[in-house]
Image (cartoon, rainbow, N blue to C red; front, side, top):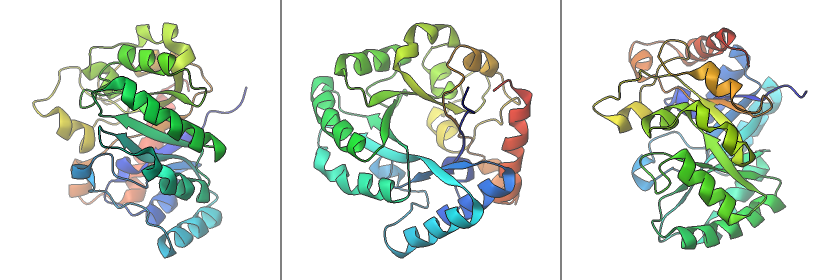
Length: 265
């Protein structure tokens, strides 16, 4: 069996530029990273994105020097105004850095329209060797794992799958028990923890402060056991509280890598 791909998501080190992300990943023992190339929404252009040109050349140089690769890139949001052609430069950029996957967010309430536009992007991504995965969440038009799985199945596109985030699964009323029946639609996992009781501000929880795996209450081992052991695992744990305490990015990345030892991956 192939070894599971372990990825350090840039949101885990939300204050860190892409080159520093690579160095922190290498120091902590993560062989892959996820990096922002495009904001997940206009109001969320708040992370240090990887820009084309000189920043990308420096990033690729850091990848080679540190022995790290890019697994996933964020994000391709689809609203009612999205033109599929707008994402061709993003996909070219993703291919330039060796990305294997890109995250899709569906905000368009007209799901047949979104599916048609996304199908064109799936074709373009496949031509570049990049798989697309939809992340469902309460803030999007595909709120639950069931809705997102139906969307993927109805699209019928071989280059489209689901990205399952345990936080969004829990916050939308889902559970690992649902995932076995949806195995044909799931292409990747994210990994984080949280308390079972939802917070007052769910959006803040999602983008600023989640719990380190094993320090919350989500059934993370059940999530792993219910899904294919070969699925990539992207560790996405924003920790603004530790950032404010002055804990440096490498130390935060090391905390996350050590937390994985609690699980049968």
